[in-house]
Each structure stands twice: as C-alpha cells, then as structure tokens.
Length: 237
Image (cartoon, rainbow, N blue to C red):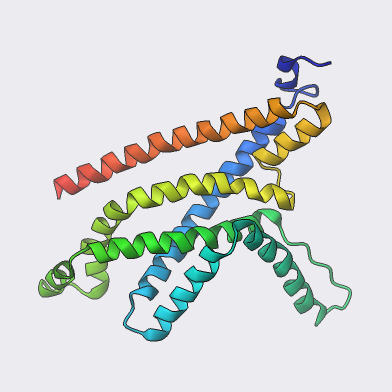
C-alpha cells in the first residue's frame, strides 16, 4: 500500500500535480465567472429600478428563475440544453453535424447567471440606500446622467455593495465544485478520481476540503484589503 506522502507527491506515483491542476481550473472558472456575473447583475439591478414596466418585469422574472432553480439543475440545463439547441441549428445547414459544448464555458455561464441573480439584489439594495438627493445634486451642477452615475453614484454603490458581493464571491468559489458533474477537472473531480483509484477517499476529499478552506481564507484577506482601500478613498473624498 502506498504511503500518504507518496500519494500526495508530484510525479507518476503521486496525485498532487492532478490536484494542483484542479485548483487552477477552479480558480480560473471563478475568476472568469465573477466579471460576467457582476456586469449582468448590475444591468439587471438597473432594469429592476427602471421607470419602464417591461424592464422591471424582465428583471424580476430573471431573478425569480435563477434564484428559484437549484444551481446543479441550472448547470445541467445549460450544458445539455445548449448542446441540443446548437446541434438542432447546425443540422438545418448540415444534417450530419455534431456539436459538443465546452464544459468550462457551460459552467461559467451557469454559475454566472446564478451569481448575477443574487448580485442584482445586492446592487438593488445599494441603489436604494443612496439618497435621491445625490442624483439631484449631480444634475444641479451640470452633470449628465452617465456622469452622475460614474462620479457620484458608483463610488457609493461599490462601498455599500462590497460586503454582500464578497459573500457571493465565497459562495461562487464553493459552487465551482458543481462543474465536476459535467466532467470538468476541478478540485472535487480530481480528488474523486484519486479517491476511486487509490481507495483513500477520506485522504483526498480531506485535502480538497483544506484547499477550499485555504482559498476562502486567501479570499477573505483580499476582500479585507479591498474594503480598507475603498474606505480610505471615501475618507479622502
């Protein structure tokens, strides 16, 4: 029986290189999903506080759907549904066409829409916490709507929304484990493969747990640094 140190070593006899690759995939997926989720969430928040009823309705429908569905079901629907949909479109031009959807992209889209549905509520609460007088003050000094948003509203919005978005980032890191269900070689999948091959399930899943905790701790330090920087900028203003 191989020793623990051999199993957790680099090279052909160990699994550390495979797990390290899983860490790279997990962090890459979370980092790629974050800006997508933030942009969509911000736009949905704008729609939900719009004066146009159709935009408010669309925003509410969007958040209701993706907050109501389990994340894993959303992932399966996007991964398999997109594959079927694209394949049907391609067969209009080539009946023999076969399309395989990339698991990384599917995971990014699925996690992005779920993240954005929750982020939109964080942004919406932040918008509502900013007094209307801030907008009126920007307009009164001759700023346009975009300039008021960029120079007056956004700095306050980021400060107010940051704690909620930080929590969503930590949730996103954990939710990346779901992509193992569609074959993406993240931390959990690599740990699962190692556990099945070596019969040391507790060891490798324990290592995976420690890695996720380490990523959360590193993220917490990064979030605290960002919050301190934003706080200093607000004081300087």
